[in-house]
Image (cartoon, rainbow, N blue to C red):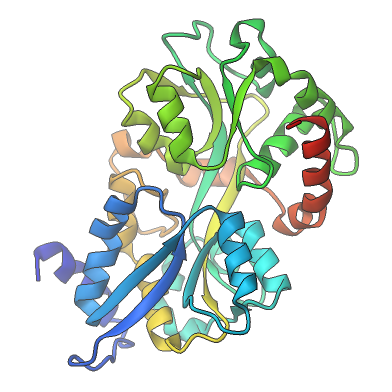
Length: 343
């Protein structure tokens, strides 16, 4: 076992919950996002497989597609652990797809920020990362920095914007942010939808996955797109001169959560995986590779890394969107988006 695995193993074994038989290999099937998979394999998959003498299999895709699969297989689940955006996780709870966690089996939960310990209510999951949504833009194409969501309507951006589809994780928060930028409220989203409809000339395409945005930047097709901070490392890998906009409307925050799927036959292994995912060592490795912002409060980052991630200072000042609110308006927003914006 290499040094890194030994360090991570030590963190988990010290919790006194790792009790798998060495000679018996099991498979843990995880529904996950797929972005940065090689780095996730390096930091999470292979170390945990070595530690638990098990095999991890991933089913990857965006939140909406994976939630649909969980619903379709509700009576015969093939997934043990689900990694979902917070309001997609709320939808999974509503569908009866998730089990409550036994928090006694997740001792590393004591090391994460309070907001991350029970974000879904009733211990249906913990957050393994939190992140902001902002505008990523090409500094060689846009000379005046973007400082507001309203800047998307600049005439020089005609045909150079990619927006997330409304069914993606970033879709509803973008509607929310634009609506607030134009004085809308939770009960009145007309300003946001009207402004987004007026934005059509500036929109090149609607994206479903962050990897599409990276390709569009790399091919010089777009100059700006709203993205989650978790995708920032992927954007930087394009080699293009990009900046992360600091918007005067403030920071919008979302969480990605990890939960156990109801009906799993690997409940103990699932708890061990969750404990592992939020451990200091894994959270530090993921942060240093710009995969996820850490929510384990014992993680300390060098300033150069911290500047590329969502960190404690931003957590303290951001507005976390109410996942239950978004879930309640999601169907209405999808119908209106398809009628007024995407057509």
